[in-house]
Image 1 (cartoon, rainbow, N blue to C red):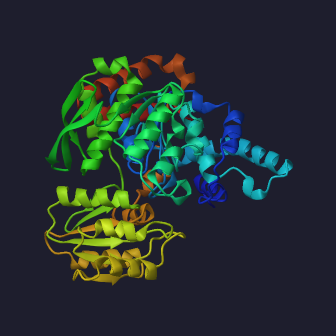
Image 2: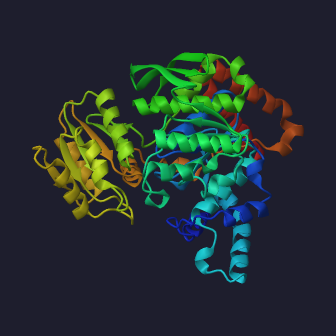
Image 3: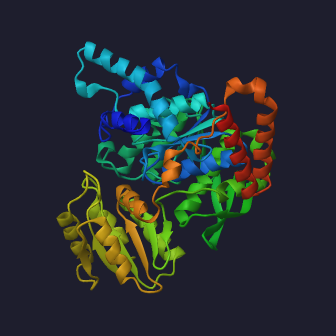
Length: 504
């Protein structure tokens, strides 16, 4: 008999995970039926071509270090849909996922019936992404969170997340990726700046001139304020460190140095600057009084699965989504700057709707040997197409291009040929990276079955637990500001234990 989580997940999948409709009517109607839970907390809204998920996780980690309960919503997931909804850095539990799904599904089904009654087609029902987004809104409001941090799924203007207040809007670097958004950076930018709301504080990466023009016009039209990388935000310094890099970041006149960022690549240092800018805008005057150690602890605790992630040693295997040329270029630079590999074996598998030639071209100078395969996705590029693109890319270089029937075979081949000092890079798609992660870092069965990953502050428990909850909140804040990860984790565990005891 399937579990409640499996039943809820199957129902969600029936809504069509690949179906995207550029229209906010359904998510607007659904959130209205739910009582507009997305307005129950301030929000940080993040878009851009690459780096969105990293920035969301960094902002969430900074909030946790400051004693703020942050709910984060990201997409896509690598191994379980539960990754998309987190509270205090932990995935929503299987049990709570099913409960929230069922609560929202009542209203989604009602809306579907209304659509049909009004003459709509069956395909006009609430989409998979709209359903998940509404679940995040509702779960965060029920927790309750102090702040919601949302990653745009695609674009911005018509994305289902764009019904949030967007008190702080983050615009990461903009380039071409999804053809639906446009064929030039300027066209894509016109969609992404749609998340800028009246009076918002906008944190933006350095952009191409044509994109910057569109960005500044949108900021002015909305009466928003702008902090931009290279002017108001800066990576003052960064240097390699064991497990990542030390960075010094500037926000306005304030510089915070000696931050151990456990991520690789210049691009992640820039992402950290954007995240810190967003956090400063969110916390406003409190940020000026905040100890530097809060920032060091927050960014020092961040984890971004599938982005320059080391999942094995001897040989070293690195996973990076790199699903467009811009991301692939960043991956190539990060591999060269952060790892001293003698030879690099590239395992590549992309989706069919991506710029495969462009992705491989950016990785051309990094690879010493290439293995192509098919991504484990219904949208995967065929092995024949991957092979043809790779042969064309490395033609005349003397670098061998091999084929593997599936990802497992490709990884086994890469591991067998890697010598001491060599590395393996798995790239081309987050679907590919997710499947590789299943091989190297499989989900813990006990974690999947249990509810220990859920962090909930129950407002109805104030009479019985007011003192204990206050003590825990203070313990969390003090542990974070003391730059003591073990103390912080212990405080979180105590909070979880309290929740388990209250939950019959």
